[in-house]
Image (cartoon, rainbow, N blue to C red; front, top):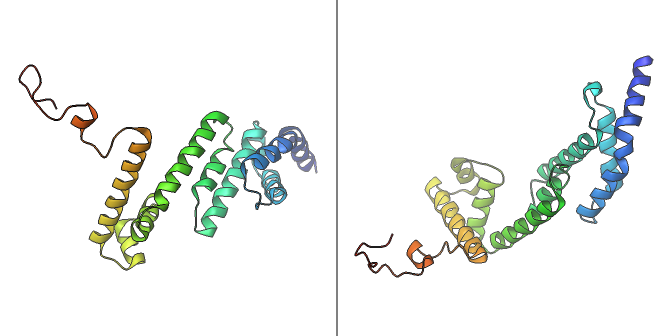
Length: 195
């Protein structure tokens, strides 16, 4: 009985005070279609179910991590992982500054827009490789293609993504190094070719 009281005391002092902060953060970052109350309730239930609760002293970080894991688990169950969902989950990490997290979210949305412009086969192969971490042979089997064809799709998609990101950020991935430096490959003053 005393162990139950000790656990309740721990929960009241370490976890419960952070429920409102978790709810507020989830309201700010999650899409409206997500039931925040269910997510908070599941998070709190999992926190209470922790067997080794005595080692947990940072209640806020602990429940934010549980909520983050729940969001990721839900995305995996759906087998369709949107970049927004991954960023939403990362916004729950208490150590990330809000400004940096929002910048990351914008970058991922930009990346999602770029990926959406890829041809269907390239996009599918790229996502299976980069998001789900599948091997070339696994992707080939799933898509009914040769491994070499999958490799070509992934290479093409990667190149297009890098070019698009480069154009956006003015890194010029689509141009040679000489063009980025403003030269045309002519010999410099010292008679040596610029490289």
